[in-house]
Image (cartoon, rainbow, N blue to C red; front, side):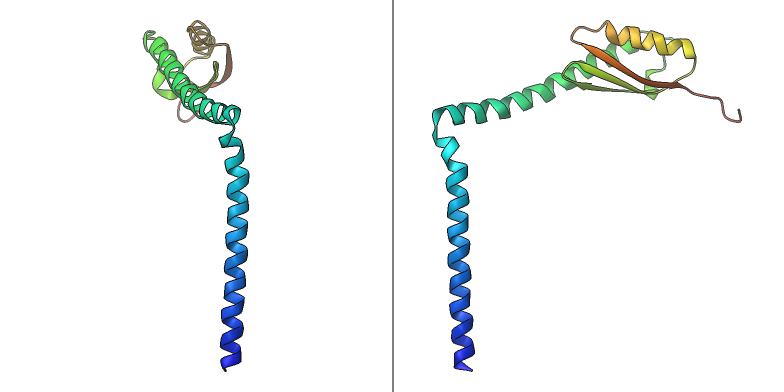
Length: 128
C-alpha cells in the first residue's frame, strides 16, 4: 500500500514538473517577440488597427443606413448593411424591383464605400 502511494506521489511530481516546464517554454516563445521593440510595436498596432477598423466599419454602416433613410420611397427596415473595409454588402428585401438599383446607387454614393455586393430580392405579396 505504501509503495502504491509512493508511486502516485512520484508520478504526480513528474507530471507537475513536466507541466511547469512546458508552461515556461510556451511563455518564453510568447514573450520573446514582445520583448523586441519591433514585436511590441507590431503587436500594439495590430490590436489598435483591428479596433479602429471595426469602428470604421460601424461608422460606414451607419452612413449607408442614414443615406437610405433619406429616401422615403425605400423601406430600409427590411435591408441589412454589412461593412468590411469599405466593401458594403446589402441583404434583405424591397417592395419593387426598381428599388434594388436605387438602393445600390445610394450605397455607392456614400463616401468611403469602395464596392457594393447586392443580395437584395423583391418581396412577394403573401399568397402569390
